[in-house]
Image (cartoon, rainbow, N blue to C red; front, top):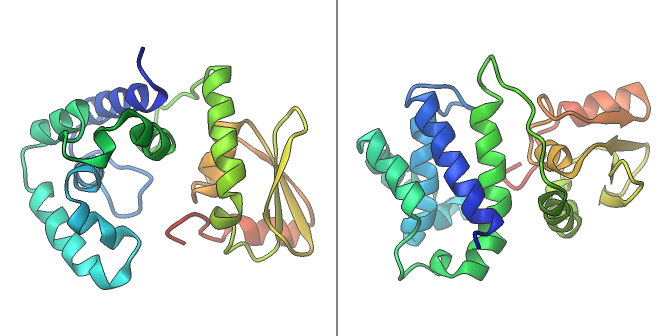
Length: 212
């Protein structure tokens, strides 16, 4: 039986293929080709991918990313579909699921929601719960740059504190939408924000997420 990460991987590959290499994405400055190269480098070149989080290694990451960006677009799509080599930690189903379910979901929406005719996707309840559990664990990291208190709330009332502070802004939405919001895609996430107008404006204008 396929995992959430495997399904999101194939969906991302399909979306990238349909969009074409020059299509825009929600990743600032990146086309679909750039995003595809990023996904491949992250899985296949751990020596360079460390630069995603470690600034001293960023120049190496940029160099390797440029090399992969120059590859035929069809080859990049195929590398995403087939997944990492057996020697990669990502080849282990448990690691793939833990590391890539959210990653591929967010990047799939980066492609989908950058297109003018995009339509909202309905997630199955099981996957929504998976996203919520991951969000609960990562909320403090994702929301650490919030200038005000930030609480995430599901429609059923479950909450997670992303940042302590005052005043407080409560963001209500489905887990997938809250995930996009906290990963810095506030402008396209279908959520409702409750709080003081100035505080809401500050949250909308702050780059949330791991790379914030």
